Amino acid sequence: MVAARAGAYILGMRRHGAVPALLILTTLVGACASRKPVNEIAQAYVKLVLAVGEHHPDYVDAYYGPAAWRDAARADSASLTTLHGRADVLLARLDEIRVPEDEMGRLRHAYLHTQLRAVRAMVELLQEKQLSFDGESRALYDAVAPVNPASRFEEILRRIDAALPGEGPVQERYEHFRQAFVIPADRVDTVFRRAIAECRARTLRHLALPSGERFTVEYVTGKPWSGYNWYQGKAVSLIQVNTDLPIFIDRAVDLACHEGYPGHHVYNTLLEDRLVRQRGWMEYTVYPLFSPQSLIAEGSANYGVDLAFPGAERVAFERDVLFPLAGLDPTGAEPYHRVQALVAQLDYAGNEAARRYLDGEITADQAGEWLVTYAMMSPERAAQRVRFMDRYRSYVINYNLGKDLVAAYVERTAGNDLERRWQVYGALLGSPRLPSGLQP
Image (cartoon, rainbow, N blue to C red; front, side, top):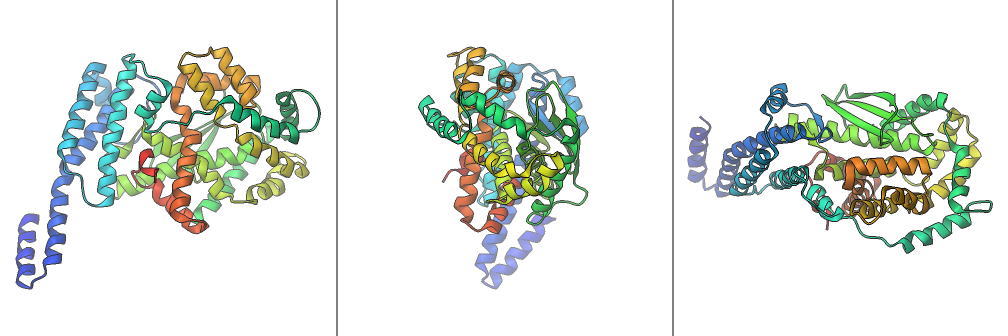
């Protein structure tokens, strides 16, 4: 029926000499015909990711597609060798399909191709293939973090040393300084919920979200991370906050933005709404954690903090609202943030610890010592971070490199206009862009 109607319309256009309309219609008919094999590959990709997830408990971070597909993956019990072969077949099939001419079609094709390569790489790692830290991050996340010498962090440490009062090792003075900014345990929930409300209000001024979107908050212990968003589908998330270690006042906004608004909750909600529901792209019903998608997810979540609280707005909000809720002295807000801004420049020190540790150059204890020395972590927090490296490996690059790539892309595209930055950011969250696609 569609072909017959298209043919009649084309004849009419020819009679009237409407060649541009004919070309447009021909392109649309061809695009409709090519979508079917891509959709079939997308469905097979979802099933492949679910099957790989049966071999690694952390691999499938979220899934809200047909329950029958997950049941089939569990019943299949396919070997890693079989799954590797399936990935090869899907990549070959995708290569046979002409790349669409429209932007979203091109992005989708590239996304599926790169995600499938990452699935295959994950299977190879599960088969005990040996890759360097950088080789693993390139294969799984479509990106490689820069290498930084210890001298870079030593220069930053000298500036932190000059900014902190007292005498003695800078790491010890920093830990002593921070103790005045711990949220009392009985006020954590109150402070966190107020931060969530503010982050949500600021996000909704710029981004439209589906009605009924929401999340619940749980407090947990015994985890290698400080916070986690478990997306449930239908614009619903479960956010867990780890209370193993003291929670400092700045973490309230960090976690509220990163895990909630405009971070992971918004990212997953927009992907589901714009790509799954509006376009029928089933590949987005599954989120393989060890994949390029994570660099976009973590990078956008971290950049979202700066977007929601530009300039001095964060310090003002914490000083005037969160500090009093936590029972902390508001006059400490500005000096605390000045020091924290310097400490944030040590962020890539964590990557260096992970690179050296996972490449076998240093032991776990030495990685912890590196984090204490160059990342200004307490011994307890450094030990937690090493446990994170043991479990998630090169995933650590997604936070800092991801943020830098997202920030550069948004600000290069939007310039200094804040509202335009929100628009570009929102478009990024609801599109199939890859880390390599953020490069100029």
